[in-house]
Structure formats: C-alpha cells, structure tokens
Amino acid sequence: QVQLVESGGGLVQSGGSLRLSCAASGVIFRLSAMGWYRQAPGKQRELVAIIISSGTTNYADSVKGRFTISNGRSTVHLQMNSLKPDDTAVYYCYFQMNTRDYWGEGTLVTVSP
Image (cartoon, rainbow, N blue to C red; front, side, top):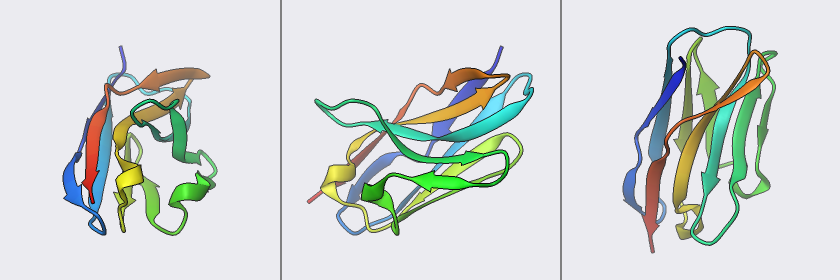
C-alpha cells in the first residue's frame, strides 16, 4: 500500500556532494519518523540520519558535520557533503508509519578515492 522511492545516488569523487531524496506514495497515516540507513559491502545496515515528528534529528557519529537530513510531509532528503570512500554503500529510505517500518529499495552511492 505504501511505497518509498529513492533517487539521487551515483558515483562521486572524494570530497564531492550528493543529495538523496525519497518520496512516499500511497496512504500516509500516523507518520512518526523518517530517515536514512545504509549498508556497505560486508557490513551490517546502520542508521545514518533520522528525524522524528517533533523535528528532532539524530546522526551517526561518522557523518556528523557532513550530512544534513530534511523533510516535507511525505518526503525525506539527505544532503551529503565532503563524501569519503567509507560512505560507499546502498542507502535505504526509512519511514515509520502507524508504528510499522517501511523501507525503500535502496540507491547505490559510490565514492571513489
């Protein structure tokens, strides 16, 4: 019923920037949180940034000062600056609605040395 679609991934050199976007379609009800996770090769999926309904944000220590999360009613964005090779991963959009978790298919970000 609810589908999340990410865009903005791609290949960028170290020090470059990308902006990821995610749009939710379908019925949106009791939205309580939205954000971004990532999974690098050989690693577990980890939280990158999240924003809750109050507007409070939280970032992984590894991206603080470089990434910024923002949102609309049914969209969430991640501005990524000063990218490093360690940021290479599949990035997943995440919404929590009506206490349930919803995930995007993922968009690949590759940062070359």
